[in-house]
Length: 178
Length: 211
Image (cartoon, rainbow over all chains, first blue to last red; front, side, top):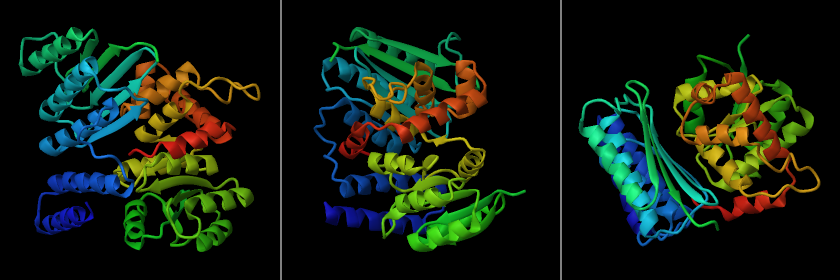
């Protein structure tokens, strides 16, 4: 792990020196930073994670790298991954990818909270937003797909958006009181 | 009159960068690379706001915040760190810092944070808001001071919106309250975090080492 890390830090530093694309460099530096943190603080490897919080963080990190938009993740409480919560995870991923691709926002927030009888995920961006009731378009189609995914697993999804006001996707999933 | 700011960081390059970013807006009255110099100079210079790093040799930022707090309680601290480990964040706040931001903060946001701290308000990053919600989650009121050991519904609402990435202004609009009221709620949460005697809080923080 240390060898891999040293190598990837050096690669990143070399890239930064050769690049003239500050946005891309900033994402790269962020990625490197979180990898270094995992190593320094001894976090468990993300593969095979069986907790919703870990899975959400891993997804956010991957989407952030793929789409070059920073995603700030805040997690309160936790819940095991099972069939229902995987649906929640899938819907959250779709919401994040959607925000990364279409919102034009400089950053995206992912907030997850596990309450006694409910799990809530918010995917928030301060981007350009869209008209949820307007004519069918790409973003509306995705919104429908997010809803369907969560509803099939017994949860609900709300998508709030207004042109110019950003978008917030709220996903809720009931769970047995713990 | 310009706000007097003092900087403490053992990383010289970083300190030079922050100095450059803030010097247009504020009077940078001094800076230190180590704990002892920082304590001595802050006591002499009495700045309005001190930007303080967390991890430094000889006890780190917590020692500076506590030592200066004993002699000069009017000096306000904003913690600025690469660490967003719960125990560092909660530790600095409980030592007396009025806010905690990470070093990846945008320069404009840092300027805002310093102004807010100078005005006597608290500065919560989304991450800190999440930590506080987590730390106080499911807490039963104790006999000593039930008010201090729990967050009100409104305080939780405010923290959740901050955790979702909304600025104070947007939080105010969403809850239909004034920005001043948002600041009052955040300051009250800060006070609870600092004064609550629950040792679970410290235990929670050391347990929660996940970034």
